[in-house]
Length: 296
Ligand SMILES: [Zn+2]
Ligand SMILES: [Zn+2]
Image (cartoon, rainbow, N blue to C red):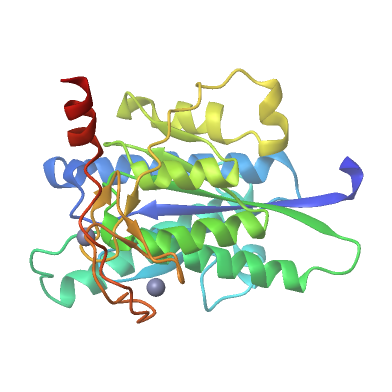
């Protein structure tokens, strides 16, 4: 069974949004994260020669591929000269990621300030990662198999405004057999926890940022298939609340459209998603009152 698994694709989604609380407080954090992620990415490539890698930067306005570079092909690796005895591919990965991120940051700074909105577009980045995975799987020659997974490294908080996109991405990933892992650097992320739970991935909010590389190597480097044999941090209790479609706020109890399953926090006679018209419900049954009367 294991012999036919040829390659393992790891797609890292790195949140490079300068609006993250951690980065705003100390800018060098981003450099530190980048270094850890590069070392982690190279470790993944080191495990097997057939292993594949992609790194995406999720920025304020856009998500871009840092590796492999969108324009170039594999020829550049051969042109690189060995430095300090480092394997050429690793040098190539490191240089490409740094260069592309630098260009992205410069481009972003040139296009002016973004105003108060500083939410990372993680759902979009995940969708891009899934598209990339899908393309590579289509290109595989017959008889070959590829295990794919996505790792999100972020210091942002997830917001319910992307709720629908998140859910679409999570269930697509589940259908495509893609595992979603999340390494949170700062805050607990309820929605991404749901994604990890749905796709069978790991969620970890790291207790110490200094140890980022260690956490990445110990927790996220082993492939999902061998994780059962390892002692990893216990799974978190997932908050499965949904966000209402009207205000994008997490709710405990709400109204669900019986036709399209949209969720609302307040009753509305017309579903805003599918435009189904509902009968106005009568006054709610007053059970508690009756009980009180009987008791007295
Ligand atoms: Zn609402
Ligand atoms: Zn509806």
